[in-house]
Length: 524
Ligand code: ADP
Image (tube, rainbow, N blue to C red):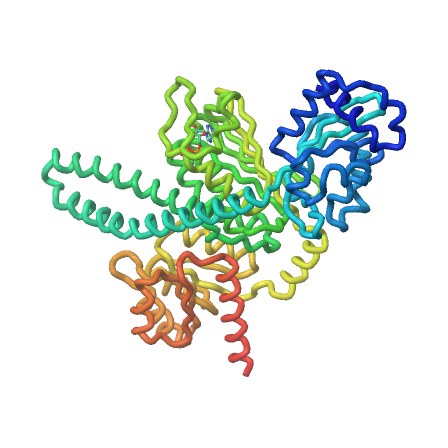
């Protein structure tokens, strides 16, 4: 190949000042062939010498750049580039000359060419070095990328539209599925005396559960792909995320008889806490699913400006040859041995979340011994740490909060969150418990769920506590859409409504604000 080009070039030496050396050379068969091949190439092809001078150009160059071959030969290659690249380009050439091997130019970057009329256009360029008698030559094949970029944009738009369609469809499918779930539960109750029918309905419930899980994952993926999920990075102490993960997953691990340890971490990350929690939640849930003896352990390891969050399990492991495929959609490891059934979507959600958060993710595993997933996030810088401490000191909570919720996991997580903020917290799951807690320690604020067990409601509990204390203690209701109307109808004074699922930041902000208002009104 090198020889072909060399011979071709030598036939064009008449354009170069040192042409005498080569003038006598007769164009042999290989030179003719090379020249023909270059002319036939669909790409605009230029050959450039070590000094950046064009020594050959095929006919396509005129088509793409507007210069006839005879015009461009002898000129600098920079002639074909937009002016803003003229200064830097010789350095790129030098770098190529230092390590001459065939490669695409500017991998991952958008490159531009400049037409004779001044117009710029995107190009793709591949470079090949050729050693000739006059030194190192570079063959550059240039292709107009305008079309492929338009095509790429069109494909991205089409893909997004498709993801939006799937997101809308799976969202709408949740409603009938929810109805089916309720109907099935009711049918199960009525069938309590009919064992065969009950068994059938239980199997139906399992199918409904898998459908719900699949739908939730597909909805997650399509929302992420449709660009409907945004990352809002903040300085976020790991403990805020970890506290929630502990209360979400400890019961699951305990049910399975394995340990779950999420080590304490005093650092903070610069990230979106909700999305990072979802990402880690997927990894922990996998760890629990694929571990039968031992434990799942989450720990933070500082690495300069970064922090590695390691999710390590002592489970069944992943075969080395399948490690790089586990993040693919619907990929489930096949190791011959019996593995628990999943959907094969958890890690593809993890991959998308990692991309959205711009965090690194890696995995290592030893079959039969265990697996470690490593998520690398930006540590909140020291300046941030100091700001965080200052902000904390200024706004650190003081006050007593009574949490009314009959879901222990939710109550526990809310309590941990508010304790971390510096509040004194007590928990009640019913009216009686709430009155008891309020009597031993009068709350400055109540954070309450609406629907409680035994037909009790948050509204009723708040009224009872206020009556007992002879004080209109402020209340924050954390509710779903359906309960909102009931609370509004109850015309509860001094109440704030937050929508479920509530973001930790929003809850803390509401608590802080409500207590500040109360303090002002008491002082006034
Ligand atoms: P699934 O719903 O099947 O768990 P994932 O996308 O979460 O789907 O994971 C893909 C595959 O990777 C799983 O089928 C499982 O075999 C394997 N895998 C994921 N996490 C672990 C782990 N901690 N230990 C062993 N295998 C795992």
